[in-house]
Length: 199
Image (cartoon, rainbow, N blue to C red; front, side):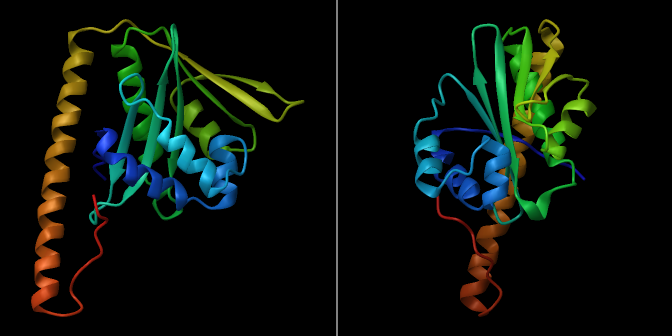
């Protein structure tokens, strides 16, 4: 399965908010370490600095954001948080988002990528191990830190990121055209349109 990951901008803030609001209570707890209510999620999205941090997303054929990653930039390392909607898990979306965030953190010139999660978050622990991250468990607190040392950026890593973004933009444009065709068909033939989120 080809998973195309597009870097998100402030224009995607609403799509990110809708994505996070679709997470069930337990998924929110595993993602943020606490069961955030809708207002707290909206405040989190409103407070994201798209100039300092990097956000990435995976869109389905109906342009719904089904997976998202927030890479928060620090002085020496970047911290990653990611989420995938329930119906799209176990398809490689989380791993692809992690790899894309790894690439950006490396190209920023940072020395490490960091994830903090609950030990019970089996999906995140699995992703961290697959990426070769060093996991430090704080069993008394029920939490774990996963660290990945990053190699220096080079021409290849910068080219790979530019290429990945261009492919993702092309994929999104194609999906937008198909979605527009479906909407048009829906106006001509009732019952054939598929819902597309407003921008």
